[in-house]
Amino acid sequence: MTETLLILFLALVLDRLVGDPDRIWRRVPHPVVLFGRAIGVMDKLFNGKRLSAETKRFNGAAGIAALLAASFFLGFLMHRLLAPLGIFGVAIEIVVVAIFLAQKSLHDHVRAVSTGLKRGGLDGGRHAVSMIVGRDPATLDEPAVCRAGIESLAENFSDGVVAPALWYALLGLPGLFAYKMLNTADSMIGHKNAKYLDFGWASARLDDLANWPAARLSIFFIAAGAFLAKGRRAARAAIGTALRDAGLHRSPNSGWPEASMAGALGIGLAGPRIYGGARVDEPMMNASGRTVATVADIDLSLRIFSLACAALAGAVALALFLVILF
View 1 (tube, rainbow, N blue to C red):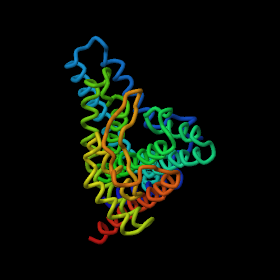
View 2 (tube, one colour):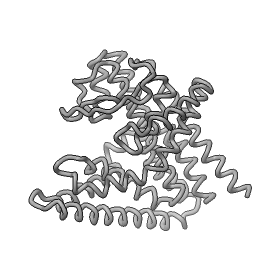
View 3 (cartoon, helix red, strand yellow):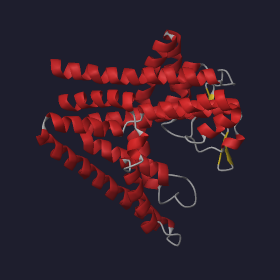
View 4 (cartoon, rainbow, N blue to C red):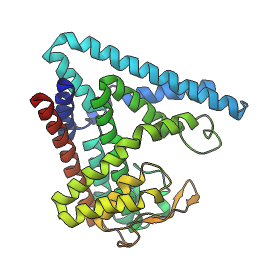
């Protein structure tokens, strides 16, 4: 446990400072891209149009089970291969763990929304936000662009930072690899449309289960970031809004970090949105907050996010200290 926590802490620091250098991943495929290719092969082979709903559901469940087992074994094998290498193996594992975290890349993508709005106006903001959300950018005015960027930041803090850190802390590389395989599968085939409603059912439900603890833990890190950025009142609002409004979101998990960020910023998030031409009607979380989000809110959310990431690293460091002490 001591080594795992030390590796996780150093990986969090490395990812926050370096992130995912484009010059590397332009030359070699990112591991998540390889996971996606494996999922794509499963989709192509076992999700035929003529199959019955029951067969699709069985194939999807069996397929994701096989991919999770393979990714778990791959993580186990990699750790066993690195263990005899001593400090060199530890250094490699730190880099591997950092690759599967998303602190800097997420910060950079959402900061691009702020920069796009400042430099290119609404068109610049729409273009930047289209890189990170699935909703139709042409339907978004400037406050909606701002809300979309903030919502993406909060949601992905949970499943792109807290969840992989948690599963690595609990199960090491096998847990981290299996979680990222599952999360990638959910993003690719976990959609409620005609093609994936049955085939992606197991992936979507398992992803909900895997993200359950991280989503709820994330509100405390966001509250810590809000406390450091704005003070005690913002921290209380972050936790209180999440406890009150998280259930208003259509996702059993995304509402927790999004409602927490809404409370910290004092704005309303979620509400009606358009995905693929279809309107999704949801209540506004923190409906008593400001209805018009601004670029300044994006910038403040990025500061809270950065401090929340620091709080996560601090929690890992504290856990490491306690493990060593006792």
